[in-house]
Amino acid sequence: MKFGSVAIEEAIGAVAAHSVRMGDAVVKKGTLISSDVATRLRQAGIETIAVARFEPGDIGEDEAAFRLARILAGDHVRVEAPFTGRSNLYAESSGILLIDADAINGLNAVDEAMTAATLPAYKPVVAGEMVGTVKIIPYALPESLLLKGAARLGTGALRVAPYARRSVGVVSTTLPGLKPSVIDKTVAVLENRLEPAEAHIVRNSRVTHDTDTLAREIADQAKGEAQLIVIFGASAIADRRDVIPSAIEMAGGRVEHFGMPVDPGNLLLVGSIAGKPVIGAPGCARSPKENGFDWILHRLLADVPVTRADITSLGVGGLLMEIISRPQPREGGESAGEE
Image (cartoon, rainbow, N blue to C red; front, side, top):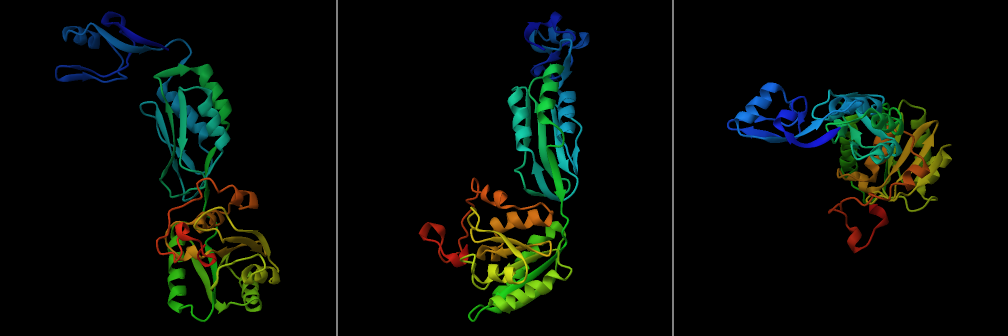
């Protein structure tokens, strides 16, 4: 593509690079300069104009953006018709956004003419939400460059994992001094968190905070219809040998990982029993404010595996906003019971 200022006579057949005002009329950028437009420009006293002129093998910005966006779009992602060199991508269903970051970075590194931007990986999204965009910077680019970008992008680098788990079992443990109203509010907060996934609580139990009793309840819930089990401890987990992890193992389950580099959310536990994921919720999960519990909960609701490596990779960006209601905010010291 050639770009630069030319005499009006030489601009015919090229595209206006910038908008030009002629009295009350405007030739918008991107307009094809026809003989009629050139005549009106001359009559307005304009002698030169900045234009872009395609060369053999060039692909226009809209077509290029659309082609790359269609390659980028994976499962449950639709591509919008392009405009001004941009093609947006939207979620077709609610779920978790999955991204091949290497593919996106690879495309962006090929040449400054091609760009792709997305929402953060693993972000919960709803149907109709914009999840990404492809923007071609110049008015056109060589097809050879487009093909190089497409090769780096691969296929389906941006996709949505729809929510798949709809039934959740809840176990709340009790200790003297823990008000029933606190548990009630905790369950209500969880119900709100489940709404975007159209999931619901199918069993809501309260048991004393001891290993044997909790183990029996976990084993019983594992036999039921719940596809995910969430445990709210009257006392937050402080060690792998504490009540909740011990009860999961006693019930025949497994503790996959305890602790996460997300604050609030440090004291979260992820396990499994009978093929069903189990979350030992941190104390901050009682708050409606975003915390590490949200990140893990929504991934599991979308049936996205959560491994130890997944959790340990969350440190960058894992320092979330302070929950003001915490008895011991992080700036003044931490409390195991609130993490």
